[in-house]
Image (cartoon, rainbow, N blue to C red; front, side):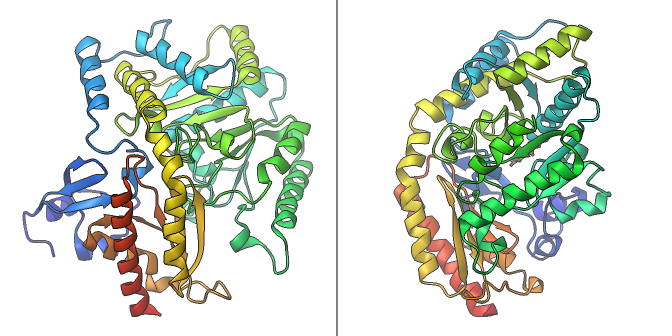
Length: 454
Ligand SMILES: *Cc1c(COP(=O)(O)O)cnc(C)c1O
């Protein structure tokens, strides 16, 4: 469909596309966008799409929020950039750290800034390695995560990510251990109850700790709901089963809240939704409602004290990014937290989550090829199956989820294919009418593609 000199052809000539299905983009051309209106984005041809992906989970306040843009512009006028090294930092950085601890599950804590979620996870790993070294436990370096987890793309965070695609980079690094994904529908055994499944995963964790030696493990990282793994909420009682085991062996539990944080699950934090208190929180994406690249490590009181004591010993923590705590990013984040948590956006998620679930469940019930609906708040996935009863997936050569997503794009709806599932995580400003538009277009696409492949 590309003509010479079209936007699509120019993108094709000069871009090394990341996380992009090349057969689709070669056949269809990339979608080149110019601007957005509420939850919609508009391409160079003037076509409008309802972005049921919130950009990449992060544009939770939509694409034209004036309060956020104004906060950015005002800060660019006042003090457009600074770092946080050598005992200097912007006033906005101080204000945001205070605010992040205030809205965290902790009564005290410390915050460290990065430019992305990947770097925040990397930073957390460095903090743990540094801490254990300082406390005379230098062997505590292994990191535990789960298969299907997504923690980012830098060398360490990609090693934490539990996806086979990292093999092309020769990753994971040694010492990154992946435990079973807590997806009961897919990984539960025949006749195994959900409770028994959860217990099996808890047992696996304890056996792994004993096998590797607790004194070799630096920390355990988990997303409350796995996002890029395909929206996988934990099995029943999962965090209640694993948290005491981690505690018993002095292994810090880190909640990667890059997607779940700031309202996606209906509460401020995903750990709140699932009833556990981590030792530290990783935030990014929603932190600035997608308007600025920024991540944060939020240490709870115990880790904050231990890390601070370790830093005092050597008088300086040798880590930081040039743009850590950037004043514009901090000013945007302060406004985003206000807009999302106090301005009615998180309330809208809580109010409309049951409606979203019900609408998607009705679509599932009308289809022979949706095996599971899973999610919480404003993050849901429908899993395509060839056979509902046996949960048999479609042949992967059919690229069913890509075809569904491409058909949705044709209809003016952006959603994301992940494995054999379709992910829907709309901006928090979504209205009832826009939700209905999402249901209608999605079902139309599902019917068309299932008729072709079933
Ligand atoms: C997106 C994501 C990351 C990585 O964030 P980047 O800003 O893309 O580096 C880490 N963890 C989770 C849970 C994510 O969804």
